[in-house]
Image (tube, rainbow, N blue to C red):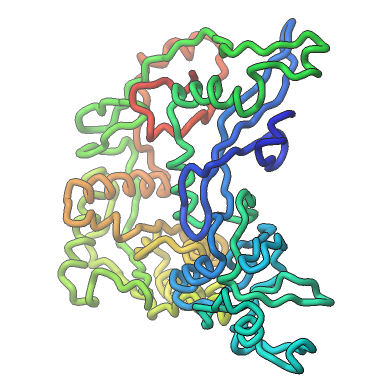
Length: 455
């Protein structure tokens, strides 16, 4: 495809074009591109085009990127794999203009690394070499580590600040939670916006406006108008609960405040584990903090209001020992922190609670999966995690009540209860004949208000 001459191909049939749409943090930015493939259809051929997004490494000074990484990771030692994972990082040297792949980010600074230099009469540091050889390119940040742009047989040490990350390097690696959230926010567009992009910028970037020579030889042209498929939107079925006002379904969601579930689960004694993080102190001062007990009381009452059977006995609340912070060198998988969580969960599991509620100060890529694994696989106890910044509601009791209601839905389901049922009168059309229901996740509904998902 002609677009490969102007765009960057990532994977099969996906081409991306600058400039970047938005930075998503930690030296990564989002680029917009287009997926295109040809598919046979009845009596014709169809071109399938869609908007897509992917991550690229930000083009910036490598020294700046390393400094930002060290600041954001509380002084962690930067390495090529930690910063850029599996990305094929290439830089342009500012003193000579060479374009070279980066082999490694070293653990030494220009003042610490030495090498043999016949030109200067023996062993010199990298800092000394650059001061004498390139006086017009002074090293302003000698505390930053060096980078090696040479080979294993012939290393070439360069101060990071004299390297500029070149443009259009696809990011090869896993995005963290925040980057993923920002990427979804950038990528989520209404069908109308995507349609306009495809028929406008997409056709232009993919070079489909005027057929190239190969297409002309076969007499092939591509219609810019999208294929129109007849469809209809079915009205949402009614939802009912055992008690309470029937909810009003709108765009696939509804409010469940002040309702009772159809079949109630038996929770028993409310059991909670508070995960204490050294780097992220919680909102409560200790077991005597009245705000904590008010929080627990409101949650227990919400469960009772929905019909879940909660014991009147005093709730069991167990804090973990303070978890050590994440350290990329000494404990990259947070094994020490996970062990402390396991000890606390094992202690709570001795009383055989139906569910252990785990209160987290923040989402963590190591602690949360460990809690689920320990509870489900090792202890055979169901766990439900609650993020305190959302559960507390930041002082808004309405938000907190809604959050507690959503958690109560999950609790009752885990306890074998039935939350709600569909109105039978709305299911007659489905029951009249043998019917297959097909679901399709076609877009992120959150950003859409008045538009149908399929355009």
